[in-house]
Length: 350
Ligand code: F6R
Image (cartoon, rainbow, N blue to C red; front, side, top):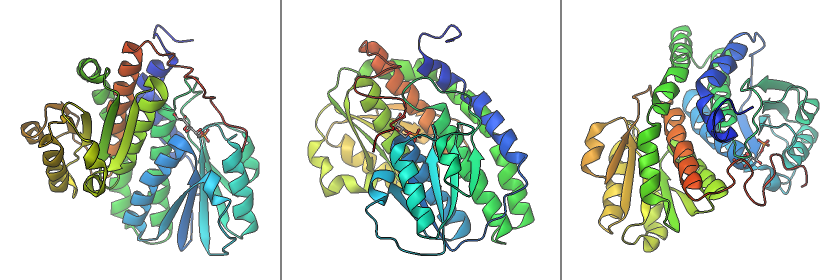
């Protein structure tokens, strides 16, 4: 049931505070979060792959351990390198054929395996040593929304607990991190209050044929995710880029009026992002800044002011803005939002 919402996607976007709250509850009740590994390999497809990329930045930052992230469809062509690695498989449905095939391969190569999935008893769970469940509730819209933020939360929690069990984080660091996770549902709730402002922005850009999403560090995968959401439900050609890569080619595509959505968290990427914004506004792009810092307003055509969060939590608020932007663009274009053309909710062929 859509409970009064015109689409499942919008309902599921608005369900995120509750979904995150219940995911955190179920994670906090786990008492089997002891880990010991030297490397991490993350394998997934689509939106789950983007969650994995965010996970890479987090785990490398908190644990100082190298993390590789693979598309499941590519991981299978990798040679069987036996290493002391924990392999993490992220799949909302637990039924994605490529991700399941990758999990079997990782096991054969001697990796310890962990799955992050939203569906209890799904196929992936029988191929791995351990499972972390996101508790986001069923997701009906083909475009993944609440399960993505729940995956981010599971990865944050995993990184904190792994850091604790491996002696890389102090007791007080763990306590502080966990306390900050408890604020995520409220940050997301406050971001959802920007819906009308985001809809207005969608009205300004939905007629464009192309658009760019840029970010750095943990928000680079969020730029990829924003572009994927835009492509899959509005059918607008959208590219996500690490902002620093623009001048290595794609800047040639920037022309007057092309929308560039720039993610500008108040972290180490802040100044560099402002430089990248200047590069595109000098070419008369239409720049939408997403930031908690009002100063960004001076450099962009429109600022969407998101709630201020702790370091590492900006992806949660930024992605909600991009989900809503894609939703409204698709709605203005009259697309079949819950069932985009050519796509299926879970991809059970390799
Ligand atoms: C995009 C989307 C897909 C899935 C991908 C993996 O909105 O939903 O890209 O993320 O097909 O699906 P799961 O996570 O079920 O393995």
